[in-house]
Amino acid sequence: MTFDRTVNEAAVKLPALSRRAALAGAGALALPHIARAADKLTVKLDFLPWGLHAAMHLAVVNGWFRDAGLEVDAQDGRGSANTLQLVNAGQFDVGQIQVGLLSQAAASGSKLKAFAGFMRATDLSAIVPKEGPITKVADVRGKSIVVFAASPWMPFLDLWLKAGGLTRDDVTVMMVDPAALFGTYISGRADVLLTPEGAGLPFTSKGRPSRAVMASDAGIFFPSYGLVATDTVLATKRDAFTRLVTVQQRAWAYLADGHLDDGVAAMQAQRPDARLDADMMREQTRICLTLFDTPSTKGKPVGWQSEADWDACIATQLAAGVVKPGIKATDFFTNELIA
Image 1 (tube, helix red, strand yellow):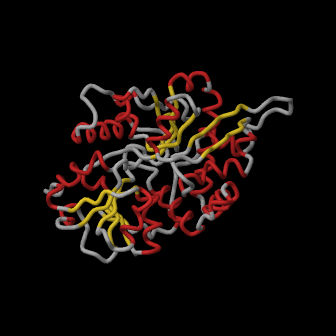
Image 2 (tube, rainbow, N blue to C red; image 1 turned 135 degrees about the horizontal axis):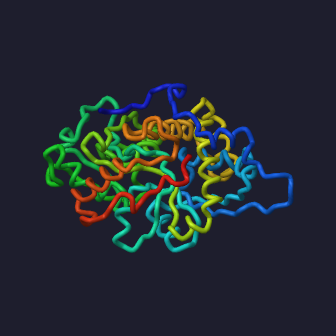
Image 3 (cartoon, rainbow, N blue to C red; image 1 turned 120 degrees about the horizontal axis):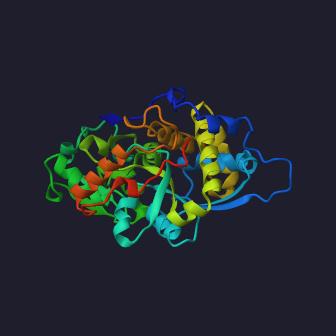
C-alpha cells in the first residue's frame, strides 16, 4: 500500500477522550485557588520544530499545562537517539522520541520506558516520485537510495531490501550528512529517500512531488513517537507525568478535531526565530495524526500502547539482528498513566 496522504484533515479521527482527559478539558484539573508552585518538568523533543511538536506547544500557549499545575520546559532536540541518551543520563525528565529505539538501546544500558505512545503505527517510509513506477520494495532494483548513517532506517535497510528479493548489491546506497539528505533527493540525485513519512513527505513534496511507500508494507514494524522516561523518574514524578499525559491527550484530540491551524500558530509563537512554513507544519501534523492507530490500538485512548505492537517491533529487530533474544515487550512500555 502506498500513501500520498491527500485525506482531508476533517477525516482524521481519534478515539473519544478518556474521562480524565474530558474532565481536564472542562477545567477539572485546574488547581484550587490556593498558593501552590507548579510542578516543573523538562522535556527534550526529538528534533528541530516539526508537526509532531504541535500538541506540546499548543498546551503551553493555551495554558493547559498551567491549568494542570505544570510548568513544562520543552526544548528542541538533535535526533531521537541523542534525546534518548540525554534522558537516560538524567539531564531531562522526559523525552519525546521514536519509542521503538528503546528495545535497541537496552543492550547499551538504557533504562527508559515509554509511558505514552502517540504515533503508534510505523512511520518509516521510502519517499519516491509521485508519478514514478516505485510502489513496492522490488521496484527499487537498480535505483539510488539516500539515507544517513544514524537514521532509524539503517538497522532495517537490509531486511527491507530482502522483503523485495534484493540486497545492497542491487541498489546504490548513498550515505550523506543529515543536512544534505532532503536536498539530495529533491534535486533528483537519488531515486528514493528513506525517512519518517510525517517529517519527510511534506518537505520533499514542495520541491519534488512525492508519495510514501511504507516500511510496514514490507513487514517492518517500529512504534513511532511517544514520551519516555527512566523508571526512577517515572516513580518519583508519577503524578506530574499523569497530568502531562492527560494534557497531551486533550491537545491531540483538539488538533484532530479540525484545529491544525491552532497547532501551527502555537509552534510559530514558541519558535519565532525558526521561520516555520505554516503549510508544511500543518501537513506534517495531519500526517502524524493518520499514524496514531494500529489494528491493536483501535478504540483505545490516545497514548495507550499495545503489547502485540511491541512484540512485532521486537520480532522485526530480531530479524534485523539489532537485538538479542530474550527481551520482553513489557520491559519497554507501560500503560499505567493512561486513562
